Image (cartoon, rainbow, N blue to C red; front, side):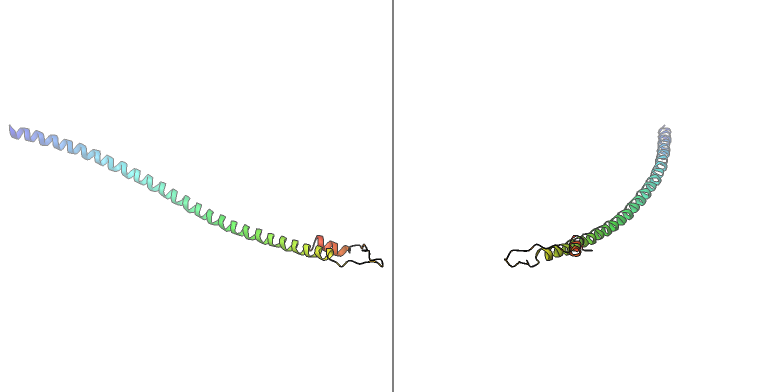
Length: 121
């Protein structure tokens, strides 16, 4: 009788193990499918990251170029303002002419020098 119970127990154990094996195989297949899906997602993230980095590099280059152009423009404006200031200063600091009674005599500012002072270029 013991052999019968042992055989039944072994059959039950084999049935349980076979069921567990099916469950584990199904789980393994599900995990493989999930792995493939995650790999595809990772490839998508990687491609997005590369694209974003390329855009960031392009934007950084454009920003540096824009800053360089703005600096050149600002420097040109400062130079123009300095020239205008020097021309205006030369007009203002002209020696004053006096008449016989030692009164200052008004004189017109030369149109060309005034034009140069207002717009030196």
